[in-house]
Image 1: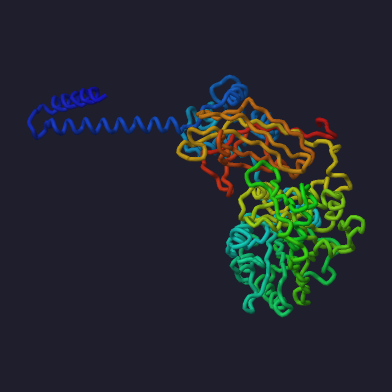
Image 2: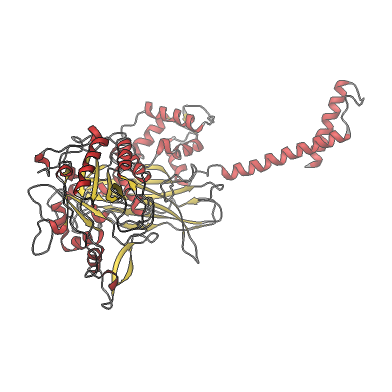
Length: 629
């Protein structure tokens, strides 16, 4: 190559000298300058070669076979698809029966604006590679349909909705030693969360918020309320509920009531005497832009929570109990954590005293919250029964699980008019979370999530409440509002779902899907227990092309309204635990059909890299009475 450059430069020199008609030193090129120019050209050539290799490696993958077949079918054998062809593709493959040629022409035009690419033919059509890039553009072809406004009826009572809820909303880390602050409250509200929990205590005569009986640092009560006021309706105009866990003296409760009124102002919902508590809860629509106060009694003592957990376990001897905590990495299974029985001896446990409410604070409470033991119960089983007024029951994760196994139908009946809130087991010191479907599938409207955990329950919760315009409220499925047996295996499927992960797009400069990884995709359905499923693709070892288009997965869903499709990419490790790469969770009820793209996210819910994404082919078919409609 150096010889080629030398000969080319010599030719340039000869032409220059013949053109100028001179060979004097003033105009001629010295030997030294000539060599420098040759070396400079060699440097430029090498740099262009390296850049070309990098560009080739970073270029979008070639279309898989299925995409080529679709393009050939809908382009009618042409080398391009025009707006008419793309409209037929949307009508027949993408599930958009009303798609028009005018609409697809706008999509093509927008594609060129987003991609900033020059067309191979014209700005009104796509060749095979442009069509492939079009399908891989999330702004145009996302697997999740987005709506700026709610699509569900928002005029039913609050008890008819699942509500986006947080637990100990002020904590920034674990439940024992972390700092309390307003950051997580603000983040939760900005993401659409509608229920915020504040544990109120007295420190040096002041009202502060902290996790009691721990060394967590406090944050001011007023600071929390100001953060709520600033962020309450940034994402959604539907009501925010503040659950106050009250550990205050009567004098400080009077002060708390004054602070609530002063800071929240007109946003604070002031219930009439007849609404304390109401006979029927108002609707989210009627409570728009209002902040509702709910009292929350002190959580059940840990001894009671462990006792409830013990009923779920079978111990080999009487000295050990088993409490079930969700595993952070294992697939949807409960990991048994063994506890010494004398650690939580109920005879030695310090029970919380019931705190009376001052009249000033009581006048602000719209949602009265009680522990299970304070509610009218059936003497035979200790299950809650509906009363004349509507209230909220607060149960720990093991308590819900225990009652669910005893009589799930009673829980569902109870929460058809009343509210139910499940909070994490007291032994989740690391701020991990329970499976929220333990609550939702049994009619409980609120599965309180430790927002800072970044675990699977967090992903699932965020995905469910991305639906319905991201307003923080999702309608309960009909099965939880009717007098049915919602856990019966005789319930017929309502939706047939077929999924193929066609391929993964990667970026070798990004660590997430770089070279030398052995990658596979977990495909899971999270939802009602009858719908729960887990599958995975084959592993592709050290391959450049991550294509799984020949692997079809079929799911039959009985309660698709609250089901989530969870896609996870993992790096297969023969000798160690597999490494997590990324995830994408999508509400099946609002998931689009056809060939669609979804970006992979980190555990924290952040997009990994613009080029790291999965291309999927989704087919949805509604069934009636277990048969195709």
